[in-house]
Image 1 (tube, rainbow, N blue to C red):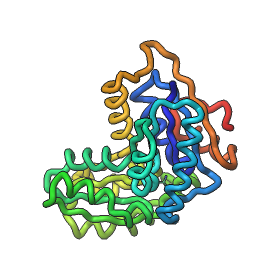
Image 2: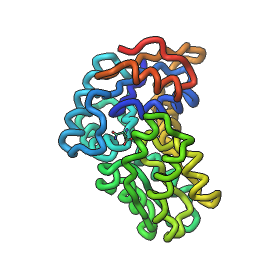
Image 3: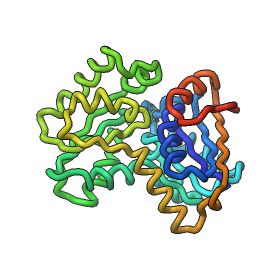
Image 4: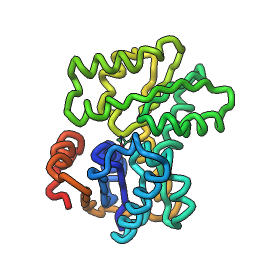
Length: 258
Ligand code: DGN
């Protein structure tokens, strides 16, 4: 049985990529809600409703577990989804927060994400649950999403935006920064350059794949050894743009999108 992975659009492919790398024998069904992206500017109720529809779709395809590969949907809808479904569902926020807590020495942690993710305060909630003394500094960076989707990764305009958004972190002595949006791992180079080597960048996409591996092992749900993984992709609009982005991000070619 495959793993179901969904995102508001193309960004979740950074999560799919980590799952392919860390769990190469697992088949995957990816759903990108490209017709209704972005989720980052929508209300909680709407995000829950969209997420529920997508989980129902993935379950109709027979998935054994679901990864909410969108930080916004994880921050706003995960608790609700976990309450409603019996299939294991995991999201980005908790794995990201746990990794940041492990990485930090001075307990000053920065978080960047969409407006909705930052407003939800979910990353901070998890961090403070682990250590009430942690200092959390947050910043919404909504313009990173279109820059990445336009392929402007090593571009002056992106460097400019990185410095505008992240400048204020310099006043705080943060030593780790959570990349709390699916697109931001693709900006790892300009962000690291700006923040300097003293700041550890935490990639929740990498962490959620690790958690998924652990979960499948604990529940005895892993694919058989030597199983050849199959990947299926579904989008709610504009398959062409999805394909272009997938070519840039994934380690393998995408033959068709439905
Ligand atoms: N996938 C979204 C996230 O990780 O928050 C970013 C894209 C969006 O919906 N704005």
